Length: 158
Image 1: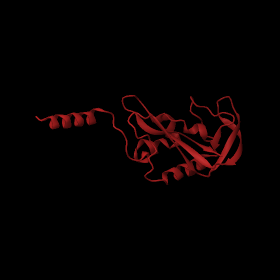
Image 2: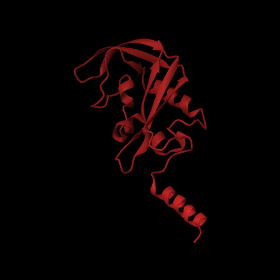
Image 3: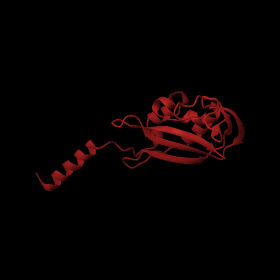
Image 4: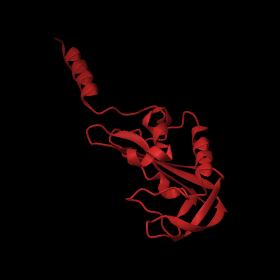
């Protein structure tokens, strides 16, 4: 066997033994659109409902006074439609081992500043504003031996 053949085999072996890196757009990864559903997000490891007024926040990420929130589920859906309207956008980290990637887009949706919360960590009173941007944070979640990319959180900003 020649040196060139051996080095080729070693490269091929490394390619099959390292964790896969996503080089395509984040939105093409099946776990990402699934995680954008507020009803599924927390079970996949996300904190999306922390930023949706009227939605129960995940137990480990309550809503807080001064926190920006989407005004309702409709505002969140409009914000998600804005991000999926950017086809081909690489929204997940490209380097092997990257764990989080944020993207801020110019998106105008109804939003609120939380003014008061109850004892369960849910915002009960808020002041309206219209967002100028929305930040989307994609991250790797799940067990260490089988992590997947998800939408970790998204929030409106003035």
